[in-house]
Length: 225
Image (cartoon, rainbow, N blue to C red; front, top):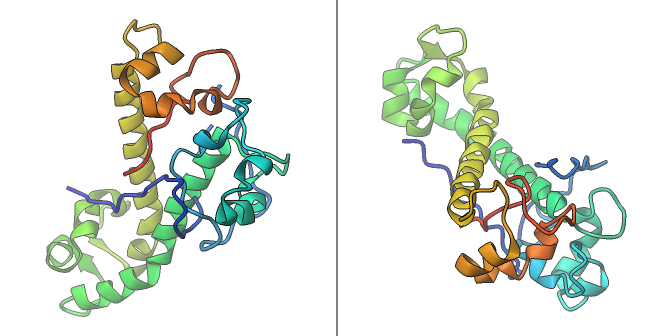
Protein backbone atom coordinates (compact mmCIF):
# COMPACT_ATOMS: atom_id res chain seq x y z
CA UNK A 1 0.00 0.00 0.00
CA UNK A 2 1.29 3.40 -0.95
CA UNK A 3 2.49 5.35 2.04
CA UNK A 4 2.74 9.08 1.65
CA UNK A 5 4.36 11.29 4.17
CA UNK A 6 1.85 12.95 6.53
CA UNK A 7 1.54 16.73 6.43
CA UNK A 8 0.63 18.68 9.54
CA UNK A 9 -1.70 21.63 8.98
CA UNK A 10 -0.75 23.29 12.18
CA UNK A 11 -0.41 26.63 13.76
CA UNK A 12 2.17 26.16 16.37
CA UNK A 13 4.85 28.12 14.71
CA UNK A 14 7.48 25.85 13.29
CA UNK A 15 9.13 26.20 9.96
CA UNK A 16 7.84 25.32 6.59
CA UNK A 17 6.69 25.28 3.07
CA UNK A 18 3.90 26.24 0.84
CA UNK A 19 0.74 24.67 1.32
CA UNK A 20 -6.10 24.01 -3.55
CA UNK A 21 -9.59 23.59 -2.73
CA UNK A 22 -12.74 25.48 -2.86
CA UNK A 23 -17.62 25.38 -2.33
CA UNK A 24 -20.03 26.16 -3.36
CA UNK A 25 -17.24 25.30 -2.50
CA UNK A 26 -15.92 28.66 -1.39
CA UNK A 27 -14.80 30.30 -4.62
CA UNK A 28 -11.34 29.15 -5.64
CA UNK A 29 -8.49 31.51 -4.93
CA UNK A 30 -5.83 31.72 -7.59
CA UNK A 31 -2.50 33.05 -6.33
CA UNK A 32 -0.73 35.46 -8.63
CA UNK A 33 2.56 33.94 -7.57
CA UNK A 34 3.06 30.76 -5.50
CA UNK A 35 4.69 31.31 -2.13
CA UNK A 36 8.28 30.14 -1.82
CA UNK A 37 8.67 26.64 -0.41
CA UNK A 38 10.39 27.84 2.73
CA UNK A 39 8.46 31.04 3.37
CA UNK A 40 5.41 29.93 5.33
CA UNK A 41 4.99 28.86 8.93
CA UNK A 42 3.22 25.57 9.54
CA UNK A 43 -0.39 25.93 10.50
CA UNK A 44 -2.57 24.13 12.97
CA UNK A 45 -6.08 25.56 13.34
CA UNK A 46 -5.26 29.05 12.27
CA UNK A 47 -8.99 29.58 12.80
CA UNK A 48 -8.24 29.91 16.50
CA UNK A 49 -6.78 33.32 15.72
CA UNK A 50 -10.11 34.57 14.37
CA UNK A 51 -10.64 36.58 17.54
CA UNK A 52 -13.56 38.65 16.28
CA UNK A 53 -15.20 35.58 14.70
CA UNK A 54 -15.69 37.23 11.31
CA UNK A 55 -14.47 34.15 9.42
CA UNK A 56 -11.13 35.57 8.33
CA UNK A 57 -7.75 36.33 9.86
CA UNK A 58 -6.49 39.90 9.80
CA UNK A 59 -2.93 41.19 10.22
CA UNK A 60 -3.87 42.45 13.69
CA UNK A 61 -4.99 38.96 14.74
CA UNK A 62 -1.61 37.44 13.85
CA UNK A 63 0.44 40.27 15.31
CA UNK A 64 1.39 38.14 18.33
CA UNK A 65 2.77 35.39 16.04
CA UNK A 66 5.93 36.87 14.46
CA UNK A 67 6.56 34.12 11.91
CA UNK A 68 2.95 34.07 10.81
CA UNK A 69 2.82 37.85 10.65
CA UNK A 70 5.92 37.84 8.47
CA UNK A 71 4.37 35.32 6.08
CA UNK A 72 0.94 36.99 6.06
CA UNK A 73 1.29 38.59 2.62
CA UNK A 74 2.33 35.28 1.05
CA UNK A 75 -0.64 33.53 2.62
CA UNK A 76 -3.13 36.21 1.59
CA UNK A 77 -3.41 34.78 -1.90
CA UNK A 78 -5.98 37.22 -3.28
CA UNK A 79 -4.35 40.18 -1.54
CA UNK A 80 -7.52 41.38 0.17
CA UNK A 81 -5.87 41.91 3.55
CA UNK A 82 -7.10 38.72 5.21
CA UNK A 83 -6.57 34.95 5.25
CA UNK A 84 -9.56 32.68 4.68
CA UNK A 85 -10.27 28.98 5.04
CA UNK A 86 -10.10 28.38 1.27
CA UNK A 87 -6.71 30.13 1.12
CA UNK A 88 -5.35 27.88 3.87
CA UNK A 89 -6.63 24.81 2.02
CA UNK A 90 -5.09 26.08 -1.20
CA UNK A 91 -1.75 26.67 0.48
CA UNK A 92 -1.73 23.22 2.04
CA UNK A 93 -2.36 21.54 -1.31
CA UNK A 94 0.35 23.66 -2.95
CA UNK A 95 2.66 22.52 -0.20
CA UNK A 96 2.02 18.86 -0.99
CA UNK A 97 2.65 19.47 -4.69
CA UNK A 98 5.87 21.38 -3.99
CA UNK A 99 7.14 18.65 -1.67
CA UNK A 100 6.50 15.92 -4.26
CA UNK A 101 8.10 18.01 -7.01
CA UNK A 102 11.21 18.56 -4.91
CA UNK A 103 11.75 14.80 -4.75
CA UNK A 104 12.13 14.54 -8.55
CA UNK A 105 15.95 14.42 -8.48
CA UNK A 106 15.93 11.76 -5.77
CA UNK A 107 13.48 9.65 -7.79
CA UNK A 108 15.76 9.82 -10.82
CA UNK A 109 18.74 8.74 -8.76
CA UNK A 110 16.77 5.80 -7.37
CA UNK A 111 15.68 4.93 -10.91
CA UNK A 112 19.30 4.52 -11.98
CA UNK A 113 19.98 2.19 -9.06
CA UNK A 114 16.75 0.21 -9.47
CA UNK A 115 17.27 -0.26 -13.22
CA UNK A 116 19.25 -3.45 -12.68
CA UNK A 117 20.01 -4.27 -16.33
CA UNK A 118 20.67 -0.60 -17.20
CA UNK A 119 18.34 -0.59 -20.21
CA UNK A 120 16.71 2.68 -19.21
CA UNK A 121 13.44 0.93 -18.45
CA UNK A 122 12.03 0.09 -15.05
CA UNK A 123 10.03 -3.12 -14.88
CA UNK A 124 7.57 -3.90 -12.10
CA UNK A 125 10.02 -6.41 -10.64
CA UNK A 126 12.80 -3.81 -10.60
CA UNK A 127 10.46 -1.26 -9.05
CA UNK A 128 9.41 -3.68 -6.30
CA UNK A 129 13.06 -4.33 -5.51
CA UNK A 130 14.28 -0.75 -5.54
CA UNK A 131 11.39 1.71 -5.68
CA UNK A 132 8.42 0.36 -3.67
CA UNK A 133 6.47 3.63 -3.87
CA UNK A 134 6.72 3.52 -7.66
CA UNK A 135 5.81 -0.17 -7.64
CA UNK A 136 2.63 0.61 -5.70
CA UNK A 137 1.50 3.00 -8.45
CA UNK A 138 3.12 1.20 -11.39
CA UNK A 139 -0.11 0.52 -13.30
CA UNK A 140 -1.25 4.14 -13.03
CA UNK A 141 2.15 5.44 -14.13
CA UNK A 142 2.43 2.98 -17.04
CA UNK A 143 -0.06 4.96 -19.12
CA UNK A 144 0.99 3.31 -22.38
CA UNK A 145 0.66 -0.19 -20.89
CA UNK A 146 4.21 -0.97 -22.05
CA UNK A 147 5.01 -3.07 -19.01
CA UNK A 148 7.83 -0.78 -17.97
CA UNK A 149 8.40 2.84 -16.93
CA UNK A 150 10.75 5.33 -18.50
CA UNK A 151 12.80 7.84 -16.58
CA UNK A 152 10.43 10.62 -17.63
CA UNK A 153 7.44 8.72 -16.26
CA UNK A 154 9.17 8.17 -12.93
CA UNK A 155 10.31 11.79 -12.82
CA UNK A 156 6.68 12.94 -13.27
CA UNK A 157 5.35 10.59 -10.58
CA UNK A 158 5.13 13.46 -8.12
CA UNK A 159 1.97 14.69 -9.87
CA UNK A 160 0.29 11.34 -9.28
CA UNK A 161 1.47 11.22 -5.67
CA UNK A 162 0.01 14.70 -5.13
CA UNK A 163 -3.38 13.62 -6.51
CA UNK A 164 -3.34 10.52 -4.32
CA UNK A 165 -2.41 12.39 -1.17
CA UNK A 166 -5.02 15.10 -1.69
CA UNK A 167 -7.57 12.40 -2.49
CA UNK A 168 -6.79 10.60 0.76
CA UNK A 169 -7.15 13.89 2.65
CA UNK A 170 -10.56 14.48 1.08
CA UNK A 171 -11.66 10.96 1.98
CA UNK A 172 -10.67 11.50 5.62
CA UNK A 173 -12.62 14.76 5.64
CA UNK A 174 -15.68 13.11 4.08
CA UNK A 175 -15.62 10.25 6.57
CA UNK A 176 -15.33 12.59 9.55
CA UNK A 177 -18.04 14.89 8.14
CA UNK A 178 -20.47 11.96 7.81
CA UNK A 179 -19.78 10.88 11.40
CA UNK A 180 -20.30 14.41 12.75
CA UNK A 181 -23.48 15.04 10.75
CA UNK A 182 -25.71 13.31 13.30
CA UNK A 183 -29.03 14.47 11.82
CA UNK A 184 -27.86 13.55 8.29
CA UNK A 185 -28.94 16.83 6.71
CA UNK A 186 -25.72 17.19 4.73
CA UNK A 187 -24.32 20.04 6.79
CA UNK A 188 -22.75 20.57 10.19
CA UNK A 189 -24.16 22.90 12.80
CA UNK A 190 -22.03 24.48 15.48
CA UNK A 191 -23.77 22.22 18.03
CA UNK A 192 -22.87 19.07 16.09
CA UNK A 193 -19.24 20.13 15.91
CA UNK A 194 -19.10 21.12 19.57
CA UNK A 195 -20.58 17.77 20.63
CA UNK A 196 -17.81 15.68 19.11
CA UNK A 197 -14.94 18.03 18.22
CA UNK A 198 -15.01 20.95 20.66
CA UNK A 199 -11.43 21.89 19.80
CA UNK A 200 -12.31 22.38 16.15
CA UNK A 201 -15.61 24.05 17.00
CA UNK A 202 -13.63 27.08 18.16
CA UNK A 203 -12.79 27.65 14.49
CA UNK A 204 -16.41 27.34 13.32
CA UNK A 205 -16.68 30.94 12.08
CA UNK A 206 -13.43 30.60 10.14
CA UNK A 207 -14.57 27.38 8.49
CA UNK A 208 -18.05 28.76 7.73
CA UNK A 209 -16.78 30.80 4.82
CA UNK A 210 -20.16 31.70 3.34
CA UNK A 211 -21.48 32.70 6.79
CA UNK A 212 -24.69 30.67 6.54
CA UNK A 213 -24.43 29.25 10.05
CA UNK A 214 -23.49 25.72 8.97
CA UNK A 215 -20.55 23.91 7.40
CA UNK A 216 -20.77 22.21 4.04
CA UNK A 217 -18.59 19.22 3.25
CA UNK A 218 -16.35 21.53 1.19
CA UNK A 219 -15.89 24.00 4.05
CA UNK A 220 -15.16 21.34 6.65
CA UNK A 221 -11.54 20.27 7.01
CA UNK A 222 -9.60 18.24 9.55
CA UNK A 223 -6.13 19.05 10.85
CA UNK A 224 -3.45 17.02 9.10
CA UNK A 225 -1.43 14.61 11.26
